[in-house]
Image (cartoon, rainbow, N blue to C red; front, side, top):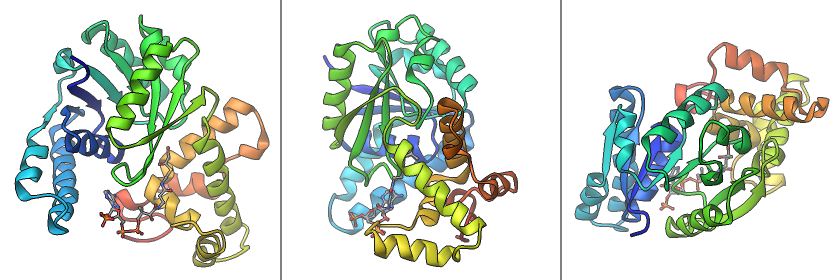
Amino acid sequence: MGIQTIGIIGAGQMGSGIAQVAASKGFKVILNDINEEILQGSLKTISKHIQRSVDKNKISAADKDQILERIRTTTSLEEFKEVDFVVEAATEKVQLKLDLFRRLDQICSPDVILATNTSSISITLIATATTRRDKVIGMHFMNPVPVMRLVEVIRGFETSDETYQTVVQLAKELGKVPSEANDYPGFVANRILMPMINEAIYALYEGVATKESIDTIMKLGTNQPMGPLELADLIGLDTCLAIMEVLYEGFSDSKYRPCPLLRKMVTAGYLGRKVGKGFYEY
Ligand code: CAA
């Protein structure tokens, strides 16, 4: 029968984006989060993004309705009894993920693959919370999910070839380009991207240039769609800090030390676009 219904945990930026893409490609989606308000907010965001495609005549209004109808929301993880595949996109906290995977392992049918969208937590570690380590894998989407083509597919120590092939195939069906990485801190995308963002924050912290100059120099000088500080705001400063902590701890190397300014901004609640303020105001 293949994969028909995808369970997604977490209705934040990433989970909402994954739900939008999956529903747009014809999959049924069960979207889970801890409260109704977050779920309703997510549906509103998804609807707004799909409406843009209607406005641009890329899809019809009827298509939009069908896409939205394919997404069911729930605060109860028990409903994941019905799903054929899981993508977890909850907050980047190790204990939270271990608890979720323990519960998923009990709720989901034994043949269901449990993928995590974690941006840097060890897949091998997350798999230890389950009795199906061969079916636990990293499926790392990039933000904004509907626009970015890559899915970084990360094998844990015990991930089977069958699981890997299923995820590669699913990523392609979602219109993405899968690329493989092994399970080391930050995998590939964040191991390379985050130190650049952290260095940009150091440049600001040390007064090398203004935030606008840093972003303009990197954007126009290295042909990136956004400057690193602007991108940090898009990703979320709390997420950037969490990833730097994983790199710093995982490699025990001072080159990954999170910039004190990043820590201070996260403490002060300047988390980026999602709260309306970060390096810039929104
Ligand atoms: N959700 C859905 N669609 C979006 C979107 C969003 N949040 N933001 C933009 N879009 C769509 C627009 O609707 C538009 O679609 P069409 O082409 O169909 O018209 C398209 O994207 C382009 O948007 P804009 O013209 O408004 O803006 P832009 O050309 O400046 O592109 C951008 C915006 C795609 C975000 C671009 O600036 C970009 O690629 N930035 C870099 C993003 C990046 O590096 N992401 C990776 C972050 S790292 C990560 O995610 C890993 C991790 O673990 C932290």
